[in-house]
Image 1 (cartoon, rainbow, N blue to C red):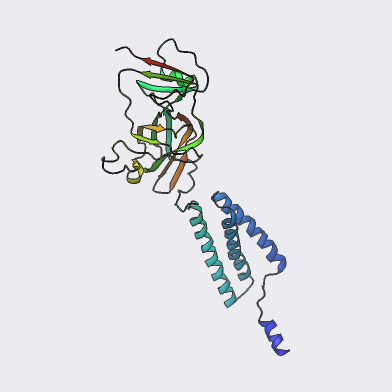
Image 2 (image 1 turned 90 degrees about the vertical axis):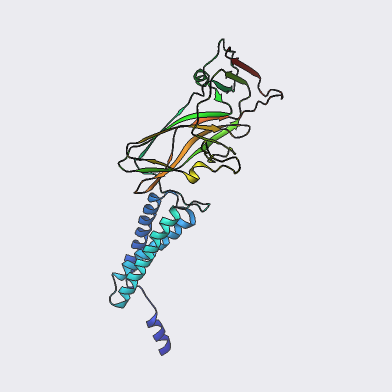
Amino acid sequence: MPNSTSTQRSRWRPATPARTLGPAAVALAGVLAAILGGTDHDLHGDAFVALVGLGMVAGLAWVEAAHRSGGGRVGLVGVGVLTGAGTLAAALTLGSTATDGTVRPRPPLAHSPLRVVLTPADPGFVYDVAFRGDLPRPHERPSWRSLIAAGGVDVGTTLLRMTLANRSRQPLTITDIRPQVVSAGPAPRETLVGVSSQGGDPLDRFHGSFDTTAPGSVALLFGPDEGDGTTLPRPYFETHYIALRPGEIYEAVVRIGSAPGAAVRFRMAIRGSTPDRSFSLLDTTTFQVSDDIWKPWHPSPYVRMYFFRAAS
């Protein structure tokens, strides 16, 4: 009996009344869930539950410390500090790491320091445009803009004029630009209009093509001088970046090719940083490009084809 009584007296019991401990636990869980979910939408599942639990341990340790004195209080304060710091460090690490293990930028700034303007660029003297429906043969050589306005899609490649402006008071660095697939479908096969005349195509600063049509997949951009003929070219932003001073504007023409056999709708994903933090942007404007499915010396995949060539 004496041994049993001694064991019962040495057993640890919370000093905080149950009527206080229960509501405190519920309140802590709600506050932590709101804070973690609101600051980083990428936290979810088991990681989210684990962080809420770890944060509750820290909070309840502080509550219990407030009802104790002496060495017990000091120990509980230490537990609260350590678990609180662990919760914060884990939230920052998990919130900045993608599922494939790569580090991703923090969520975009509420007011982005980068202004992005993307517009379709006229290809100039040579272009092919495809349609999903019947198009009567034009009476004269059609302009590229009139064909696109009539619902046509660029075939082979499409050109975009890209303008990037630093509208902040801090220097800004653009570390990556990638076209991203929004949706895709079969390439148009009903009507093809081809136009060729004397002159050259606009010089593009960047170029890239999609390898797959999966939504969210990206195309890597290459510069005009990437590769020396003896080695494979490397994506431009693996070895370069774009630096913009406050108020500075950068302009370039981007040439994008479609995935094989498909028509792809895409948008631009841009990453960058200021001295304060990193940011990522998904431009809301979408563009289309169709694969060049017509091959010389093969039966035409199109129902009808119209070609116009300027007289020499």
